[in-house]
Length: 350
Image 1 (tube, one colour):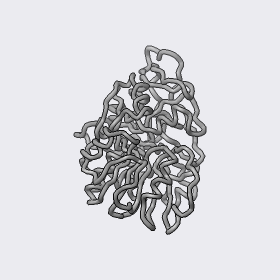
Image 2: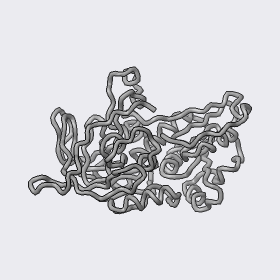
Image 3: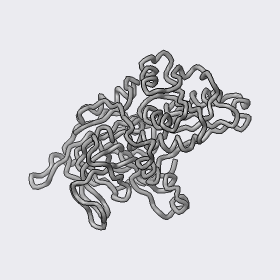
Image 4: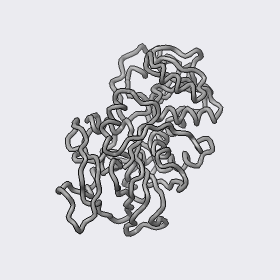
């Protein structure tokens, strides 16, 4: 993982905000491994080239779990999680052009990049040496308000449901990048049928691919959910598909799924690991990798990914299946995601 740049915190927990100052509320991670706490904070300061948005909805991503549970490095607390954020621009900082108050924008995982390192110069900003990440190294969207770098926000349609849009800002964008990495093969396997997979399954079907959904053993509800989205086959991740796959995407953070996916792809097939964190991959016989099979990973996303996703015909009007929680119930939403009790995506509403 790249070195992360801990952006300045544009808020401090100094107790209740003074009468003359506006206040915001947020679910704050005060200590790694502890529940989030509901806090009143001073409205975030607005810096150069930044936007302040009133949050309409924020998706609950598995990466948020990795932050809360301390599975990512260099977590600086206190931090407000959340990076699938949909909001209305309330204020525009100096240096911002082309954005006016009242428009809807999305705040995704990639918060900023340096623009100078080798990766940025090569248009691979997802690998930037000193990035910032929303909800990880700069305050995120589990709040009533958020400040974001204007250059990394995503314009969103004013007439769409903000709850439906929220999961697209990570589950959709990361899923899209994984789908591109998987190549153009006909048979695509998806391991872990959650927020990202249920979006990308729809996109792949619109591309006329055959989709094979792999779930936890015995999870008939998840398999039925996958079948409702017109997948070709749904079954246990412990089983082989009825036909060899051209490629597979592993969304679940379970390292043991990687060798299983390798066994499911045909010669020359590719296994894409889509998560930012995964348990250790167990050893496996070389013959499962041989015959030019490949294992690749996807790291973060780029602004180009967002532009492509929201413009591609196969991605338009994708239906997101959501479970809505009040912002104060963020811990409940995280628990449901952690336990695997969700079909689709969880979304918080202030």
